[in-house]
Amino acid sequence: MPLHMTKIAYRASSLRELQDWFDGSSPERRLRTRYLPKRHEEMQGGSLFWIYDHAMVARAAILGFEERPDGHWDIVLENRLHMVHPKAKRAHQGWRYLADEDAPKDLVEGEVTGDVLPGKLVSELSKLGLV
Image 1: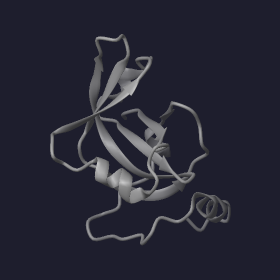
Image 2 (image 1 turned 180 degrees about the vertical axis):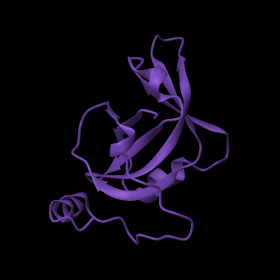
Image 3 (image 1 turned 90 degrees about the horizontal axis):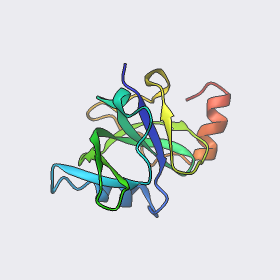
Image 4 (image 1 turned 90 degrees about the vertical axis):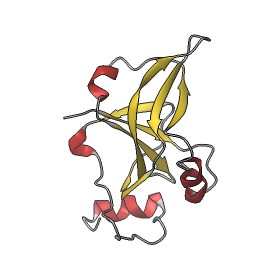
């Protein structure tokens, strides 16, 4: 089972802005990080799950990691965003590991969740077992 990562979409002012970043105009997107994840080899076939408004809402497949000339690293992502069933997730700095069994499932083709529920509402509904 692959290992995944989570990351806050901290520069995105809306979910639409995050979706627009993954425009499909090129085969990959790159995200700079200071350090290579220690468990990067386990992430073959994994994804980076994006957190927006205190909920995991989307994912992009991780294609690999490449060192930059400045000593930092690029997380190479597929330039395609997959929407997932929203799942409450607290904010954090940087990225965190996510086990496959804890990752939210993709929305199937044609499935619509409407506007993404606010993260705090998703959290409360999760506590009640409703999402």
